[in-house]
Amino acid sequence: MSEFEPTHPPLLSARGLAFARNAQPVFGPLDFSVDAGEALLVQGDNGAGKTTLLRVLAGLLHADAGEVSIDGRAATASLRSRAVSYMGHLPALKSDLTALENLDFLCGLHGRRRGQLPGNAMAIVGLAGYEDTLVRQLSAGQKRRLSLARLWLAPSPLWLLDEPYANLDLDGINLVNRMVQAHLRDGGAALLTTHGAYAAPPVRTRMLVLGRAMANA
Amino acid sequence: MIWSAAKALMIRDLRLLWRRRGDALQPALFALLVVVLFALALGGEAQALAKVAAAVLWLAVLLAGLLALDTLFRGDADDGSLEQWLLAPVPLSWLVLVRTFMHWATTALPLLVATPFLAELLHLPHDQLPVLLASLALGTPLLSLLGAVVAALTVGMRRSGILIALLALPLYVPILVFGAGSVAAAAQGLDPVGALLLLGAGLVLALVLAPLAAAAAIRIALD
Image (tube, rainbow over all chains, first blue to last red; front, side):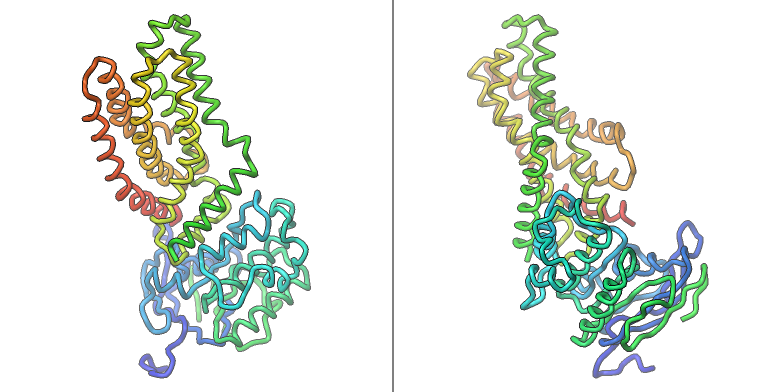
């Protein structure tokens, strides 16, 4: 693989990426790359470091070694903030606000994709009619769907999804896959963590299997 | 971009405040309680009360602010909002500044409005009221900004409780000294402007530095 491919460098690439907690290696060193239009499925058992890897890629944690580049440039905070959307275990939703008010705030914070409206995004994720429901009254799966709506509205090309299938019913799993598919068709890329091979979206997919404290790409 | 993010955050905080409007009154009620208890303990003697009124009011406001300090970032840390703040395309320090301003506006500003009534309760001489209000107007934002740094430092802990008070109080001492001192100076017929200017200078300095420090502390806490 050539590093200086002039036409299009991979949307995200990591080289020798490693992370340790209290001198105990969590993962790595890892080498991988994701092109636009590709999904990377990160697999591993509980505790294999999937969430940590995504947090490192998002810039929430600092890697101990290695480098991450986005679009061929070394990932800085400002570059990440424009290119990356992260959906973690914590929903980042205010339970005392309605679904739509939450989306309004998150759109104000992250910016909004051209031509996308919070109301439409709620319909896409199957929450039409819940616009004025307080988030505290939504089920865990519905909160997940609301987070997906936020992701859908964000203008970033790279999605980092930590266990996107958690709490979702079969229809919800299909929804995630359809959204990933549409996002990839628009030239985006996605990283998904799962602990099983289930429900892999029908797109060009690379695999990254994390083992405990040692990984093979 | 930074204005739309600030606007979104302000609207969000105002909506949250409206949904939990009962909570919003708590700092003012606490200050009222402190003042009333003080008045009762001193026996309601107008002369004695007038002498300590400014100091008591300053202390009540400071303690009420301390009580509300933990709510500054706690909720946003627990539900993962802070993570999204970190990943947003606007500087974290800017969001911290806006959040601190909203926190000040919703906890300290009601106190400021209630101060003339509380002052009346303590028989504060009327000619000292403008100085007291000026010192509080300059002092409470400064308390909030310094408090934001402390709240950010303890945001990674499950229960910060008394630690936040232990960390914040030493930082609050100079503000209390100059704030209550300005009114004391006015009471003795001296010029209170010097102390007020020092508070103002501190406020300007904190406006620039405190959000940066608090943002750095949040990054460390979430790491």
